[in-house]
Image (cartoon, rainbow, N blue to C red):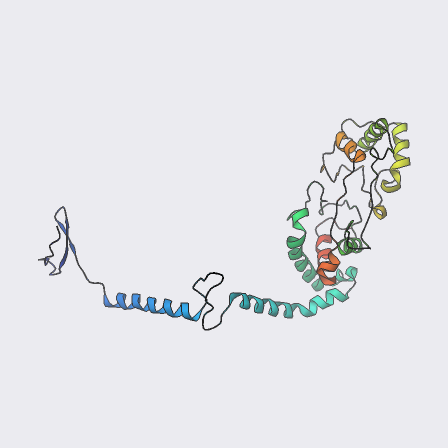
Length: 291
């Protein structure tokens, strides 16, 4: 029904709606509520005029106050950078090994390095620096190019096989199969020899295998296969494998001998600057595997 009536009990006009004998009262809203509601509407209109709000085709209204969240962020970053200025300058001018002798400077550098690592290094080495196939674990004691603070700094500064830095760390493992340096039989023999150094299944140590290893591999990996940091030759007797983690396999060793894979690490010095690279070096050195 739609006829409006006056409710006998309350004296309030009804809306004319009734369900199962229950009539809906047309009770007016409290004045304070209405004025609050109207006030929020006026506030919203004023806000959209004063601040950026209405979307346009390629931008938005800027607001009469000229406020910008980006400008506020830039201001906060500038203040933070200014506050850190003295410490950043001190990091840049202090030899990287001496940073570790200053507890406050080390703490500052490590905090900065942690942030830099997440932005620039975690994509390859993982957020926890545990590495992945083809990307070294930075938490252990195995270092291809050395784990001292100076060596880590050098690696970060100039990279590994970086095409843009003439001082980059550089080595190339020969293509023993493709270049005809070793026959398939010799590759099989020396692969079994290498596998035997770390107890990989299928590994067999033989005089012939040791001789092939000394003649072709020892120059970079050492006669005892413990690796040579100056040559960037990783240890082959520690069960840590760059492309196969801690497992290793005879077939994986054969594949690397036949057609070796070579990773590339950017030279961060030109990109980040001296202070940032030192902060990264301090952080990586402090992960647990620094020497």
